[in-house]
Length: 188
Image (cartoon, rainbow, N blue to C red; front, top):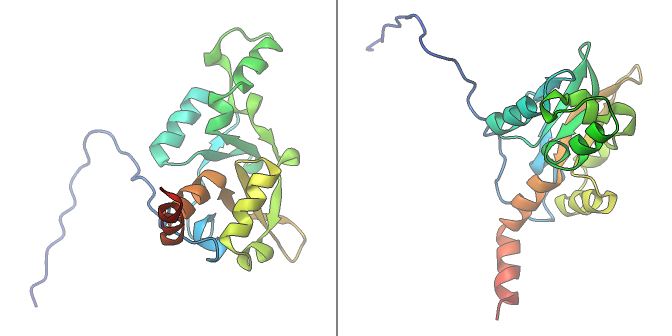
């Protein structure tokens, strides 16, 4: 058997993390299990941001990692959630109008995030047994772009097990064979 020789060398230039590719985008049908289109943090590392990070830098992080939401950390605990919609929407302007800050570059993630106590969540066990169409409809009904998936530990602590994204579901369901067939039947 021919065995290759491994030769470490010095790294050069800048180092970047590879974009995530975990299952995002595979077509699903509304009748498929909902867990096929959620981000399960036991399989994929959650992307986080410190609450003191400038919002433009957080948006750059989202683009680099291919996500639309970041969990916000304070002292290694989840303090909230920030989405690309929060950063690109009216929240920064509303914050500036009601604060002593003057410039967009001064707005931090913690200023416009949705705080932990205002986030909506679903029970992990319920989502494990739900269908994709049911979860998508729930996201639409509550008018949120993201819902946390919470698993209760034996000590009753809230373990953030995953994240459901309405945009991800809509892309995946729209790309499903059943959705394409339905659209083809509806076309004149």
